[in-house]
View 1 (tube, rainbow, N blue to C red):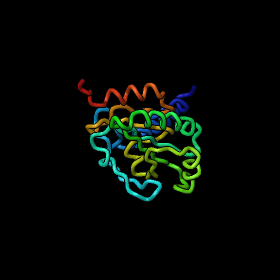
View 2 (cartoon, rainbow, N blue to C red; view 1 turned 30 degrees about the horizontal axis):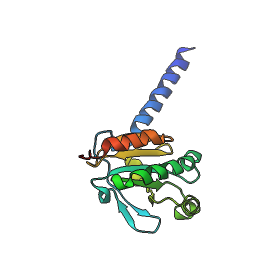
View 3 (tube, helix red, strand yellow; view 1 turned 90 degrees about the vertical axis):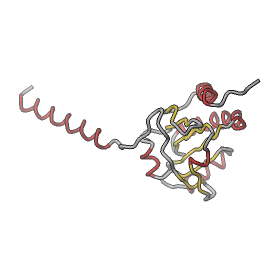
View 4 (cartoon, one colour; view 1 turned 180 degrees about the vertical axis):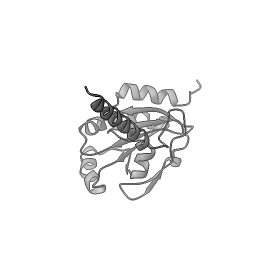
Length: 171
């Protein structure tokens, strides 16, 4: 490899690395830090804010109706939600579909989830650093991010993670 080719390759890699560093949102979430606040519209037009769930364990799930993995994990998320909602667990599924409500409603009609479905905005996606789907964040009762899941969530792992965040019951 000539010196000229080596220098060009070096500058290309350096520029690519710099681009990745600079293009990463500055305020993305960090485990143990407070989850970024948000206010989103749910599919019936009501507003939903993270602050509405203060004191609960929350799974914030970013998904899309066209995402095969998202579609596959919905029944598992529904099952975990049904088992743990009375214990103080909440699930907010924030759709990133470009078509908004029009794209989401047919899928929701088919799945009939009982948890909250919202339409994510770009600001919230960026605040959470969402790049892949599905991406989910477990937020503790204290409002801090406890865990990030990229890709499909194992239901048993999720349930154990939820249980670890719930207040211990006294006998």
